[in-house]
Image (cartoon, rainbow, N blue to C red; front, side, top):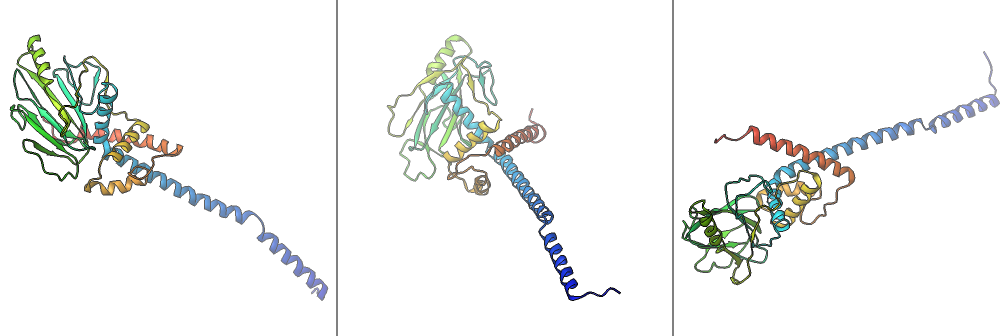
Length: 313
């Protein structure tokens, strides 16, 4: 057996300790730890992106009625050159240039949009004469408010409908039919109905529809324009690209009151930058996710229209 003197033992211990310290300071463990961290971070980022995607899909489906409203309103303001309370109409049946979700070319449409932020608005529907009006007033949620005209509430006798904004508490003046809204925005889609399809009766019908008046309560003299949009481009269809769709949704969310049934959705949307007190500024990566989300939401809705509901034709 080899005998070790004190000097030899001291040298061996020094070598062993040096080797141990050198091994501990090697970058291998550090690299492995960094790899684990990166893996964890990439996993968290992946989950965050999927949550963002899921909430964007749900927001698109939830907000589709308001985005549809906004698409028609923007066409009313942009393409028709109208302002709130102006009446647009078709002097002849619409052609292909009238682009909305459910158009037809057998109706002389009459349409107007109102905003109640500044208070109640009067819709004065004339009594049936040489022609008639019929149609519905609708909220920005595409919720029917009231039918008006010869087959509506007034049965062709005419009436002054008073559109009341959310939370309105003042007494309704005598002589008005109150219409309470949960939204500040609304529109009406009416049909002017001539006695016959003759050019003479159609001319009378166009003159009759210009007796329809829309004005702020207390200001019946406010000027109203009647704009013939026949053969004019009217692009009132939703654009299912991320930038257009979510910009419209953000605009509507900021304009309209939050309804009780939508509180949970507002919380989810707030996390992706859509809400009353948050700025919608998606990153480049989030914009790509939004594009995927709106594409899939559109496919889902198209499939739903094709496979659900009750056939009535």
